[in-house]
Length: 142
Length: 246
Image (cartoon, rainbow over all chains, first blue to last red):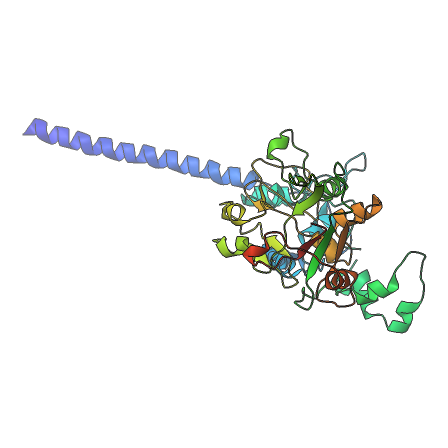
């Protein structure tokens, strides 16, 4: 019986000790994860052409895809080609130029679309079909 | 820059009074046409039905000006595998074995009034615009290719591989079906399709583009005055592309 009690106590102590160890590891891991998050900086991207976007910035950040989706149906289905909420309009203003003066695709690393989408971990599917640079006819917007 | 207050050039012309529109601003600028243009924010209307007349007698075997213009306009045919490249227009050479008469004609989407591709599309991606142009909404196309099987003219192509370097006005990509759009982006700014322009520039004038519903339109006039044919008229699809001299 005595040996049995001793073994039982020993097991309890061990399990408590294990809990403490696990908690300590978890806490230290958690802290390091938080620290890692704190190190993720806000996306940086080239500034757009012009002074003002077609909608206030906070609305564009949240709802730009709604505008684009609405506009795409209007354009494809009905032939309404107003530049204000068109993808081509976005690209005209937001595409940056390289040192040689050539347009850089907006989905290239560090560029306007890509930088935010990487930060938010949202895949962009537009540019498997759509041009990511302004057209030669530049541009629909002033 | 405040885009809210920007007035697109065409809207300006559309809204301009007739008196202003008749003034000559610059040589070569056709103000009357601009004044007639649909406003940028106005949807395509069923009042128009865009169509093409192909004059087979003027079309020459070996000339592919229309095909090249189409390829250039939409960025087709740049891949290293021409076998799988999209073909929006094909040149077809025909020989009548009884008489020996040889014909050459361009074959593209016939922009049917009753398009079989639209009938069979399971997602509604194939559709007919109000002004009669038959298109694929690639946002909803799932690439099933039913439309390709249904089309009696074999006018549609499937994109098998990733594409790069697409044109802004012609988004194209892997997994979707595509075909002649009657250069809808040009039509929307009151221009003729690229193939028609190229044919005229090549001195053939075998292609006439216009509004079938407008009795004063050169296309409608020619359709009214001469005998033209639909391809596979037996299917009763009422195509917007008609052939003369066939």
